Length: 281
Image 1 (spheres, rainbow, N blue to C red):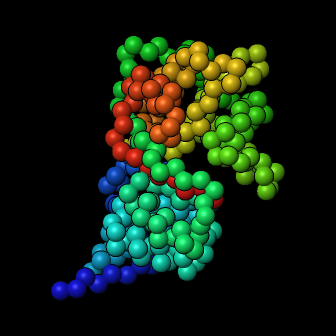
Image 2: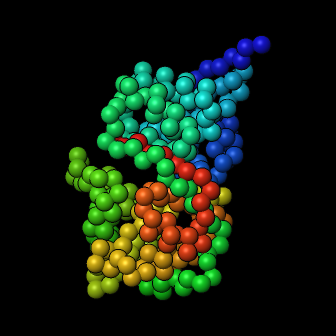
């Protein structure tokens, strides 16, 4: 018997079914799950559409289509359906990101019409931990950033983003959206830094958070302070906050070629459990 499949934009009434899929892989899906738990499935509040792939009337896979295109719990048939929909809609996202296998397939199908990409990062190890390493002392000077310190933090955030993504977050709207995101993370107590003499020497954020898992992002050490172990002691401090206040599992993903960062995260207690892929436009 042939399986009947269909793909459609999910509606607010589909929230329960969508969350069941998202929460089946709480670490890999933390970014999208955190948005859906706050905003639901209304495209205006969510900042994009949530596509659902159905087999025999049952929701099996998702794809978030907003600033990022993110395949979720998607097998080959679902990926093909999402690629067809994305191709018809035209590229509206600035990146495709997600677990390496479905993201690789999605990009293979979209590249003829969407390519070339500015950069493809095909292997970004996904790392997790439930406990910090006992032999790395958290930096006591790393703390939550206050709301009145956004101007102090912004230069470090801009430097990190530009290094990591290859373009400045100030392009286009002059950085208004990016500064709003930085301010949001500060206001929710998920932005951390060490500030010496009025300058940020280490920073990181908890960018996505659910009751099951959270994700650290934006890790940055000022160039003149690199090689001094600040990434390890700083990450140990952020990890302590994350496990105590946010979620029982902490994750991050890192570029495979960034060997120093991977080793530093391993020393702090992270282990590699999978891989992500990012396609940047």
